[in-house]
Amino acid sequence: MGIRGDPAKVRHTLSLDFRQLYSNLDPAERLVLPEEKVTWDIEPKPFSGYVIEGPHDRPYFNLFVETLAGADGFDKMVKASPE
Image (cartoon, rainbow, N blue to C red; front, side, top):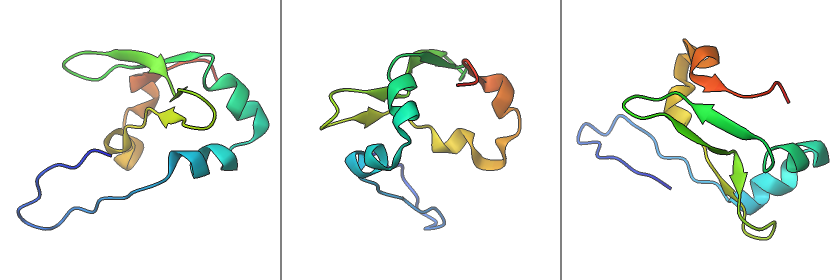
């Protein structure tokens, strides 16, 4: 979980259990997400990785919630197969 400073107290921090999120995925998603790399074209340095990493009993998700707000340009920022 990443937390940034918020002196104005206007932001919210959401917590989730990756194991619960993993168990809620469709079985097909559990197969493709750890096997196909995704590239996040984020400044100042792009990042390539798997959406899900780690063992099934302790999965780790690479999530970038801040890029989803408004989704403006999101289709250009994240590059991967449609699956």
